[in-house]
Image 1 (spheres, rainbow, N blue to C red):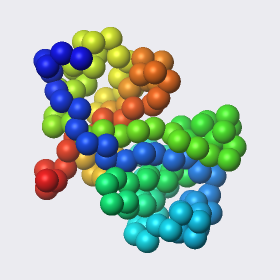
Image 2: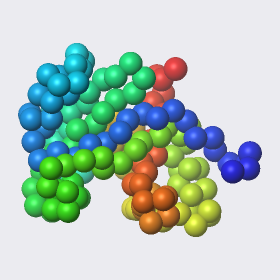
Image 3: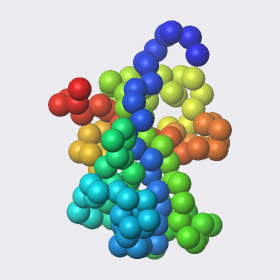
Image 4: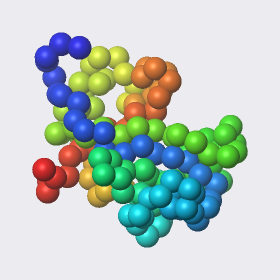
Length: 144
């Protein structure tokens, strides 16, 4: 990629869909040894229940559907055990990133909206990103 446009920032988190956040918390804690696990919370606008597992260099975002019409419910129909749902990268300006992605031919899904970290996010359709659902997240203003 040329030097023009925004620079891809750090990997903020990997989203993992799960039929049960409680079971996933137990797996990350008991099997994998995660010690910093946040409290699960509902994010009704996105139709998901969310829990962050803090890692030294990133986070895992556990996603459980809130209702049958949740995008995560559709994912779980195809992947009943759960699995990697998306990767999230930080960008300095979400509106500039959305415009640039559209100009480069990527399909941006919907308008920028507030994500689980309280900052604006967009998603890029996996057909244009090598089969991976990509979330771009505006870097939190208090981030390093």
